[in-house]
Image (cartoon, rainbow, N blue to C red; front, side):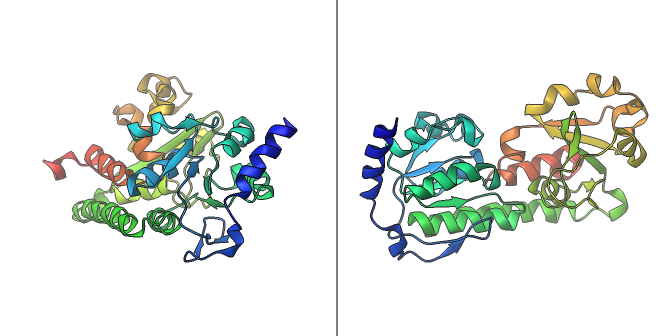
Length: 297
């Protein structure tokens, strides 16, 4: 193993001194500045969202995780492991000779520290808002020499979101439906105000019942959900069985919630509401169409 890594390290050294940076500087989601000796041409992506972005802007991707399934072209790229840093193969990553690794932030810290030891630069992509996603798209465009393409992708995404916001903006505040977004059921978790899922709900015309909670993934109690009485319950389809109408009716007291009582449970495709990429615009529209179909006829 040590000999293999040593050989891989020698290959990585051929990338040159990345500290001799000449590309315009960017700042990643963790506040770390980064520029490169030259635009990256062999990129590894450790998250589904960044994978979508890289393909959308036309970057050269040589490695992804098993969770990176969109676009279809991503399925043809080498797999370097699963979601967590522990499931990823450092040896495999080194063998692919990347000149940039795009990680998903703090969850990959252990791996990115190891990569730094081999002189491989990394960019942390973990956006919490539409503006953060757009900034990340443009930054990745800068790092890969695809700035023009990235500008178009980011602008198109934001314009599509704004179009939906204009439609639902015709509703009065009193007509906006209250929404509970369930992330997980044991423990019960929702999206905090620092997440793009919260932004998707609000941009789609919903009123997030836990908009007052800061951070990313706060835990909430059954009693508080019942008390706040959402008119609609939403979630991603990778959690779908747990928020089926049948499952929700089986929870103590939940049959009293208007959303459950009236069968207003909406399950949306994970790819457009859980992956921070250009398709979040589709997620916003899907939420709006589900809440206010009359606005889109």
